[in-house]
Amino acid sequence: MKRVVVGLSGGVDSSVTAHLLKEQGYEVIGLFMKNWHDDSVTISNECPWLEDSNDAMIVAEKLGIPFQVVDLSEQYKERIVDYMFDEYSKGRTPNPDVLCNREIKFDVFMDIALQLGADYVATGHYCRKGEEIIDGKPVYKLLGGKDNNKDQSYFLCQLSQEQLTKALFPIGELTKPEVREIAKEADLITAEKKDSQGLCFIGKVRLPEFLQQKLQPKDGVIVTIPSDFGQYTKPAPKFENKEAELNYFSTKFSYNKEDGKVVGKHQGAHYFTKGQRKGLNVGGTKEALYVIETDVVENVIYAGEGKNHPGLYRNVLFVSNEEIHWIREDLTLKVGENMQVDARIRYRQPLENAILYRVESGLYVEFENKQSAIQEGQFVAWYKDEELLGSGVIS
Image 1 (cartoon, rainbow, N blue to C red):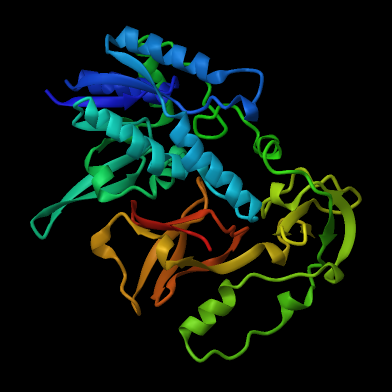
Image 2: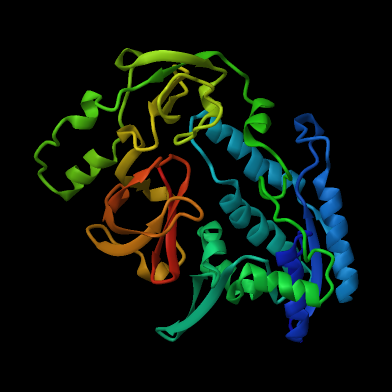
């Protein structure tokens, strides 16, 4: 009998995951990951992890499976939180959920599971795992979930073959309503529970408030850039080769205060991210203002009017060598090669046509259509059909 450790988070998805595995005849153990207890960075007065671990325990009792809480808060602080503060202070936007899966759930947590004699680790992600024998060896594939509204493969875009070997995603074939239905039939307390929002396991946190506790406020100005700004309209030069062209179009626009007009104040450029609309608190414009660039050195936020402002759009991005990650190592591009793919730069974004170009210094992703708010620090993930082949951090 194969033993599976399930990360029980106290939500409906992981509850149904455990229930299905038990029905399939696995020996199931439920583990709740406690990832936060730093009171110096208080999240809010409510303490959701207590309520969640309690729900997870009730589900485990109902299913008749052993249950325990593991405290991973030290690793979480080191690998996720400190990294986030560091990235934000540099004006980049990290994705804690992607990192949490790579560093915590399928690394630290997986090690604990294997120590418990587990054959597999299962999570309640909406994605699927495929397998194909290539050159006599099994190759594992990460496939999108059947529920298009909930496909969570993007969050797992940094997993490796080794991690996928031991992973199971039992609800990947189901839609969210079907999962809730199964939970109801199995009489699980989490059947009607709302989906949690916020950082992976820190609880119900609002990012700016969280950041303000570690990154000091510092007053700066908000400058609006007109949509006919010179850099947007100047014709592109003639290029010697494709790489020169890609380099040109992946380079972001640069601004000075003199390029626009000061329309307001802010408390720190490092609290803002490209494409953000809320929190600027500037009135009197025809359309809403969007952040088009943040300068954390000069502490200036550049904004543009309307979500179609040209400062928000680019169609090429770059990933440096050390940030390129292939789940399908056998498909790794060599320098000079390219590949037609579908790609996304954020969770739930519809897949877009793109071409990958591998060069000496890294990888360019050229989209057919311009993308809004390409943000350094975020992950770009590329797919073929429904399979996620690889990903990288946007530089």
